[in-house]
Amino acid sequence: MGVLNISPESFFSDSFTPCDQVVTRVEEMIREGADIIDLGARSTALNAPPLTVADERERVLTAMKELDGYGAVLSLDTMHPEVLDAALHYDLAAINDINGLGNPEYAKLAADSGLPVIAMAAHRLPGDPLDLAGTHAALQEILDRAGKYGICNLILDPGIGKWVSDRPLAADWDLCRQFSGLKQYNCPLLAAVSRKTFIGDCIGKPAHERLYGTLGVLFYLLENGADIVRVHDVGASRDIVRVFEQLCR
Image (cartoon, rainbow, N blue to C red):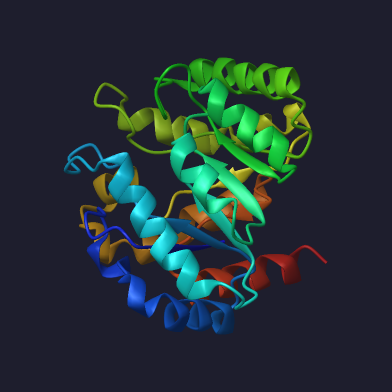
C-alpha cells in the first residue's frame, strides 16, 4: 500500500504530492510495485497545524477528480464522515479509518458502502492505547463495533506510532515484538510503520533519513504476520516483500 499524501503539513514533507500531480505520482508508485494507493489529505502528526473538515474534503475531491477513471486501486484515509460520504461518489476500493469505527455516522457509511474497512486501534481518539494491553482492548472494541454495523470485511491496524503525547515510544517496540499475537483476531493485519518516530528515536535520524530503519522493522513485521504494509517508499519496500516471499517458499 503506497501512501499518496496530499497534505503539505505531513511529518514527512518529502512525500507530499500536490493535487495536480497525483496521476503522475500514482503512475510512479504502480510502476514501483504498489498494489493499493492510500489517499490522505490530513496530517495526524501531533504537531500538525489544524485543518478544517471542509478543507480536507476539498483536497480529497480535487485529487479524486484527477484520478477518476484512471483505474488505480484506491483506499481513502479519513476519519470524517463528511469526507468519506463525498468520496464514495468516486471509485474507492477500501476505507482506512484511524478512528477505529468510533464515529457511528462514519461506521454506518462504511457498512453501507460494502467496502473493505481498515480500522486502527482507538478507544476514543486515534491511536490512544498506551501499551500492548490497551491495543488488544481497542482491537476488541473495533471487532464489536464492526459486528454491530455488519462490517465483515475488516482489516486491523494496531496503530503503531506516537499518536498521542502520553504514549511511550517503548509501546511501539513492544507492539512490533508481539505483532504475531494479533493474528488471534483472525483478520488481515496492516503494518504502518513507515519513517515513524520510534524508528527515528532508535537510530537518531529525522524522517527523511529513516528508510533503512523502516525496512528493518518492515521485514520483521512481515515475518510476524503483516498482510499489508503501508509505506512511503514503494520501490524499496516492494524489494523487501519480494525477498521475504522468496525466503518463505
